View 1 (cartoon, rainbow, N blue to C red):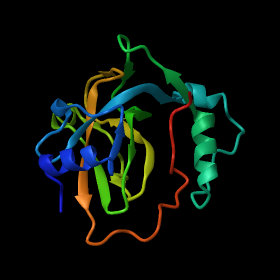
View 2: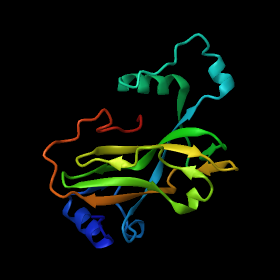
View 3: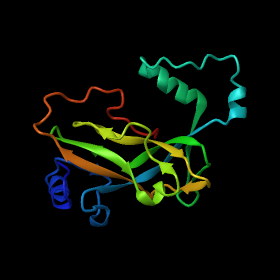
View 4: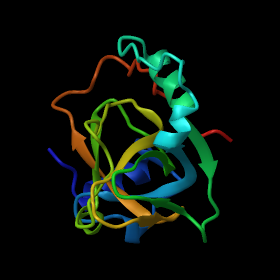
Length: 188
């Protein structure tokens, strides 16, 4: 069951659902919470910049999450942008970015992170295949952003960029999330 605005407000007021910085009333929709971009983006190297890495084995062992993060650190550059500047994502480009908000879900709520229709109309997707946020997750969400559209788009820190849709579990989870991404956050 997807939570309504009234249920979202109740969960926030009781402190069982924690979102920091604190959510304003204007950021709560009928069945979602707006989340915003942080100022930190991982920009992947261009094809010509990757050519400089010739000879390195960039094959990723997907069975080992450490390999995934290692390759991201080799082929991506974490960059911080001022709010008034932002990051331009070109057609066909893929980047990573964090939400400004840090969330903490209780053991009876899961969530989905979804894009905004305005951005989708320009061809921007905010996740590739990973919309699920499991019960007991704590941390910032890392978004996988792709520009499938025909024009470059400026992504500004602080802009409302995605929505968190909360779902009540049929019964509370008995296990805490065991994930390499638990407590993830952007570099300070």
